[in-house]
Each structure stands twice: as C-alpha cells, then as structure tokens.
Image 1 (cartoon, rainbow, N blue to C red):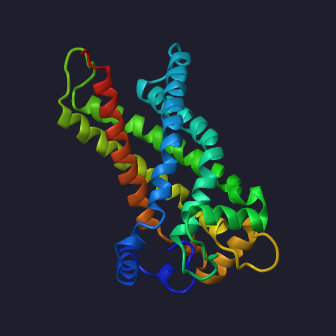
Image 2: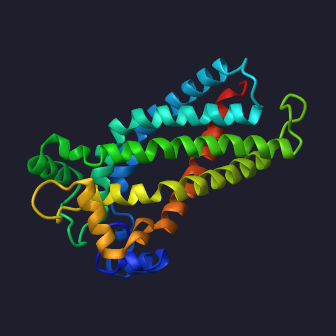
Image 3: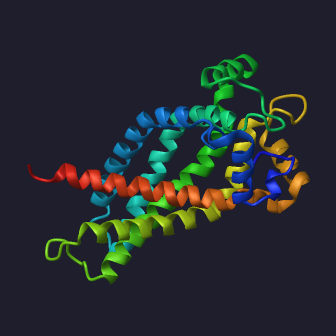
Amino acid sequence: MQVDSSGFGSMSGMAVFRQILRHNGIRGVFRGFGTSAIGSVPGRVFTLTALEMSKDMVMKYTQGLDMPEVTRVGVANGVAGMVTSLASCLYYVPLDVVCQRLMVQGLPGATPCNGPFDVVRKVVKAEGFRGLYRGFGLSAVTQTPASALWWGAYGAAQHIIWRSLGYKDYQDKKPSHMEMVAVQSTAGLIAGACSSVITTPVDTVKTRLQVMDNYGVGRPSVMKTVKALVKEDGWRGFYRGFGPRFLNMSLYGTTMIVTYELIKRLSLKKV
C-alpha cells in the first residue's frame, strides 16, 4: 500500500490482502518471510539483550531522582528503546531493504529479483554497498523515536494498569499467568497505537525510498520520494497503509513482548 501507484494505495488493507491472495495465493502474502524470520533472529537477540542492559542502567541512575515511579519506568524504557534501536539500525536496514524488495515484486518501479541473494547482488551492482543502506537516516529517524515511544508507552501503561489492579508490590500479591498476559497484551496494544500514529508518515517515505527505482535519473532521494508521494495522493498519502501498520506494530509488539516476558519468567524460576 505504501509503494504502489497503480491502485493499492487507495484500497483498504483487507482489499489489498484479498487482491494479493487472489493473484498470488498464500505464498504472495508471505513473500520475504524466510529472509525476515531467519535474518531477524540474531538482530532480535542483540536488541533484547541491549534493551535489558540499557533499562537496568537508566533505572539505577534515576533511582535517587525526585520523579513519580510511573515516569521513571517510562523514561527508563523509552531511553533503552531509543539507544537500542539506533544501534540495531546498522543490522536491520540492509535486512529491511532485502525483505521489502522481495515483498513488492511485480509492482511498478520495483526491480525484478529472484530470492534474497539476487536482491543483494543487484543492489550492490547498481549502487555499491551503500545501496543496502538506502533509507538509513530515515530508518534511524523513524525507528529510534518509534522504539522509544513504544517501550516508554508500554512500560508506563503496564505500570499504571498493575497499580489500578492493586498490585503495588509483587512480593505481597502475585498475579496469575493469565493476568500477566492480559496486562502485557493491553499495554502492547496501547504502545502500538501511540507509536504508529506518529511514525507512519516517515515510515511510508522510508519504505518507498528503499524499494522504488523509477524516480528519474540518479539515486532516489528523500525529496524525490516525498514529491512523488504528494503528486500521487496528496498529503494523505503519507498515511497509506496506516491500518496494516497499526496492526503490525500492535500485534507484533504484543506477541513479541508476551512471549519474551514469559520466557524471562520461566528462565528465572528455581529448578
């Protein structure tokens, strides 16, 4: 929806889903899945490890400050998310470029490629190694505040929900597994909503910059991408694909954090 100029941009998310399913089958919906799934594993390990370390450090150094606990938790999560996201862009941007080019095969302006290695070969041949880092600046601008906002909102929302349920001290009253999943899921949805509203316009420009090659002579730039988007659909074009992006950030974030928190709790249990 973010990159196509021949009709998908004006359709709803479900209509686009049905269109892809009808023309390409279930494989079309999962284009780029293998590359994304396999490639994300080492990046996710690094991200979550750095996140925990950064969060612990911020919580430690803000311990003596005169601020409400919910603010302190939100700041610690936000700073940790921002720092971690900025560092992880070095790994994720090339992966993002490859995955997104596989996803948009067949659309106008997309270079035909046969698999992830062919994408890398063609990008490097056409633009050199820096072609794999197309949109790095926008990725940092998008992902860093998005991650800071997501983790900050998640930490603050979870803290507020636990307090409202009467869990002011985990040592006195232990929540059940179902309660923990429910609270974490709700906090994840709130965080996804906040983050997607603010970051979708920049993400739309970044996505088009990474996958489109038909903006005229020379290497695509941010300004060329913005002008093309405004020409096609006006300023509302910056919110193309908002529905799917909201679902992506909410459902992905929620399933990721619930699974992560569950594994973390299980790993801390005494044998």
